[in-house]
Image: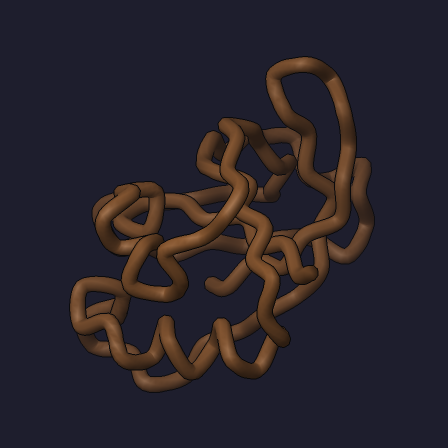
Length: 108
């Protein structure tokens, strides 16, 4: 099982179903340095103390490999950032509304 943190467009259930119709989802957040919704630019500092802003989204678990999830996301036109062809991915600590933490991948 692999866990992803989705924000912006990939929080829509119909788009998540395009990756795999079977998934577990819960609302949660990650701590980031900054996020500009207009340009969809996100930065995460390597020093966790510098990540002072909260980005809300969905924590989604798939019973798939990481590679398979990435291939499916790549096929979803609505998930592409306009003007960008290169993305970053890293593992980040998420927290759900019940206060439970979990590591998840974030793409930005």
